[in-house]
Amino acid sequence: MKQMNWNELPHAGSILKAGNANEYKTGSWRSLKPRWIEENCIQCLFCWIYCPDSAVSVKDEKMTGFDYDHCKGCGVCAMECPGKKGNKAIVMEEEGK
Amino acid sequence: MSTPTQENPLTLKALTHKPVHLTGGHRMCSGCGAPTIVRQVLMAIDEPVVIANATGCLEVSTCLFPYTAWQVPWMHSAFENAAATASGIETMYRSLRKQGKLKKEMKFIAFGGDGGTYDIGFQALSGAMERGHQLLYICYDNGAYMNTGIQRSSATPFGADTTTQPVGSKIQGKTQRRKDLTRIMAAHNVAYAAQASPHNWKDLMTKVRKALATNGPAYMGVVSPCNRGWRSQTNDSILLSRLAVETCYWPLYEVQDGKWTINYDPKDRKKPITEWLKPQGRFKHLFAPGNEALLARFQELVDQDWESLKKLQEMSKS
Image 1 (cartoon, rainbow over the protein chains, first blue to last red):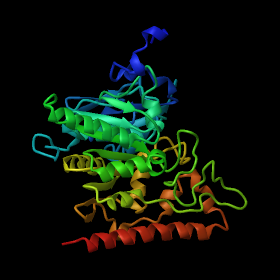
Image 2: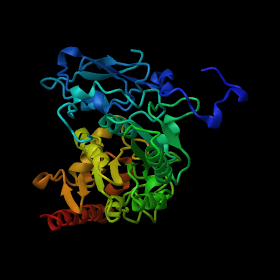
Image 3: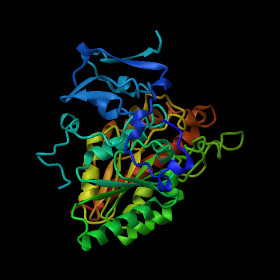
């Protein structure tokens, strides 16, 4: 975002564009990356309801993958993933491998 | 209106159609429990909502000028007055409705951490509850001033290592027991008081709807794991909130019209408190040789609170 001059700042420091933090990418914080293994996914949506960063994408009531622009790689999704027959549908992998 | 209905069921599939009111890109720590709680709370509500936020992790990290992660009207004024700010907004709303300038039904929520709720914001909260404003105050309780570097608060559990009560040769963490704010709020005879945990999203969201459907002030305490302050892993916030409930450290219950209801009773599957303490580095010293008595004391405190809660439920029956 462009730096504002004092005379461009909104009155009282109000932020007029709701949810513009979405433009700020926190994905670079990540050292571990979640990988979705679709065949093990039972679409329980636990990853989605527990994600602190709104970084699990859903479409038509189904989990469709991750928003890597915002995912901080905490691993809560992989931890809570029940998977199928003991095989997790989300695994954490080292970033850059 | 705010209670679960057929058109508005509390299932994850149905909830995926709700707009996300807290976006990504906020600067809460990786694996923090608080944004999960906020997302669940906002998803439970259908009406337009206005948020007041006390100073704390949630406030500073979701609203770094010129960015905000909130998709709803949101206001921060100071550390101690989230409840007073929300009271003012709610009063203005009632006035505008009376004047016929506003037709919509709206809801009002104040968020505060345990520092801004148990300690610094306590008198504002107590006042707002006593005056009977139509608002819901939600405390996300991580048990210390995590934002400024893990200083003890009156919500910090017994024995926890904090930077202002560090473990040394004489003192083994916090020597006092924690304040039970949910019960203090119930003692204000508020319309609704409850404890919830983000691992049980359905229970939490049902409680938010119940709280907002009541005719009066409501309070909710929600356990919010903090991996920085609790010295745990980034991936265990939901696990630790579940264990807090299963060990009865953080029982799920609600108080409405003087009736106490325990929402989850593990009965004979109640886990020993060590299961919750062990993954947390802030309690590491309790497991050191010579500190067995402190560990036993922690269990004793949890058991005392749990037993008295069951008695309150029993007494308020019928």
